[in-house]
Each structure stands twice: as C-alpha cells, then as structure tokens.
Image (tube, rainbow, N blue to C red; front, side, top):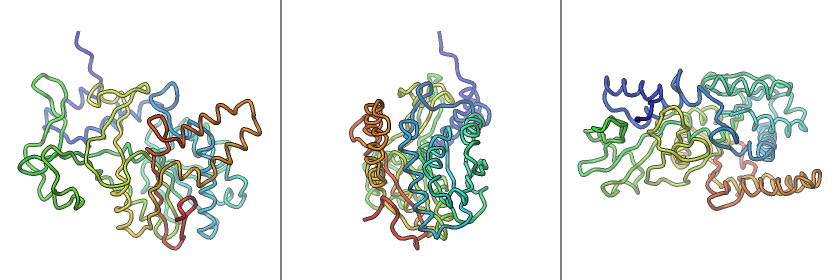
Length: 365
C-alpha cells in the first residue's frame, strides 16, 4: 500500500505542477514555515519527546554562560540604560531563561534589558511566554528581526542560521546549474537539475572553488539575516551566533532531515521533519563585514564555553549538588567534547560587533 502523503506534500506537488520544479531553498522554506503545514508552525520539536535537543536543553550551564557574556558585552558598550536583548529562534525560551537568571546578579543590566524574541511558531511562543513571564523583564515578540526598534542591541542566535533555506548548485560541463525539487517519472519527489545554467555563477564563487570538477555541489544562503545583524550592531552592539557548520568555504551537500532524533530522507513527508544545512561561517562573516561589523572568530563551541568558565561552573554545581555530579559531567562532555557525540568542535561561535568594543569575552586572541 502506498504511503499516505502529508498535506504539505500535496501542496508542493500542486505548486510544481503549476510553476515547474522549485529550488531546494523554496522547498526548505515551505517545509519549515508554510503558514498552515510548516514544521515550525505546527509543533514543539524540542526535547526528548520531540525531534532534536539543542545545547540549552542539555544543561543550564549553556544559557547561564551566555548570560555572563551578555552582561560583559553590555558593560563594554558603556552600560546603556536601555538595551535590546534579542534572541533569534528562541525555542522553548530555555536559553533566555537561564541567561537572565545568571545575569540577575548584575542588577543594572537586568533593569536595562528589554527582551525581544524573533519567533514564527505560535506553539513555541506560548511555551516561551509561560517560561519567561515570571522573570520581571519586559518581553516582546516579533516575526522578523527588522521589526525590532534600533538602539543598543545584543543579539543571540543559537541553532538559528542552520534552518534558514539553502540553495544548491551542481557543476556540469556547461556551467553551474541550480538543484531543484521535481516530480520524477516514478511519481515521487526527487532532486533534479535546472535545465539552464546559472548566469555568471562561477564569478560569484570564492576564488578557490571556481575550478571545481564536474559533479561538485555548492551551497549558499540568500537570506539577508547576516547583513541585518551586522547593520544592527555595527554602531552600538554585538551578536553571538552559535551553530554547526564549517569555518571556511567548501563544497558538498549538507541538507539533512531529522525526526524522532533520527535522520530521514528530506523529501519524505514534507513538513513532518526538521530540515537544516551546515552553516558557512566564512560567508556569514563576509556578509556582516560588508555592512561594517567587526568579526570575532569563528571559534569552536568548546573554546567559547571554556573561555566563559564552564569548567568552573560545572565544579560549582557539583559542589552544591553532589548527587548530580555524574549528570553534570555528562552534560559538560556533551557540550564540549570532540567526536561524533560531542558538540564541542562541530558547533562554532561567531561574534559580530561594533568595532569600538574591542575584543569580546572568550574571543580574546
């Protein structure tokens, strides 16, 4: 018996029938943010009962150290009396809750902070509201970063950029062609290649990739979030971006789908799985630099957290609750270890800031 198609797959098939094959980026955008059937719009995907776990869900230490970073950066900014604390894609609000709790020791920062959360999921917004309403800090929600008023700003984006739609192009004998989602002769959704090559595409590639062999795949994001972040902080603020990806330009396909903590086919059951792709930190840094922000890093998540004192924080937590020592050690290893089960090297941290702030915490050279 044929597997029943998801409602979003039926909608995607209708779009392809009308307009022809769609880019990987458009397919990814529909899967994640379709207003009725999108993955992020219809569920809470986080935690043991969801599809994946992020660093703030692994341990309170992660968010607490981000709170320490925010306070230190605010002080470098001259301790403005009103600072916009922005989180992009705040999940369940766990990171912001832990960060603000740690930052409460700096009473002046706490009094100055107005929290702005950029969130498109109604379900997650409800969870965030319940978690954060008792903190006594003004909180506002937005659908896009551009809605937030200008002024002194600190932006946090943990596992946000990886979910922004990614385009793919493949090198053919006559040039680079965009990869698309189409309906195969078998009737299934499939990855295909646009008929015509992308005009002048090779000239836009990083210099070292322009002579790539036939069959090479290059990914890029056309989203302007890095430019917007750079514009926001270049004169009065800083942003911290933490995500998984590569520090330098490279080739290869990284689109992946996760459901129930396991990988699945990105074309199977659109809207029912989380779609992500590795972050190209070099491209992210270049975009922010163009607009005038100063770049710090990227460094590994391991170096970021150790530079902010995670080992000392773990020791303090174990001294306070010896019965949780094994759990704390396990979380510490998950956040900082190398290898396939650790997040320490796979995840990178990049900061973008007002050039006059100088070196930022944990990024000192």
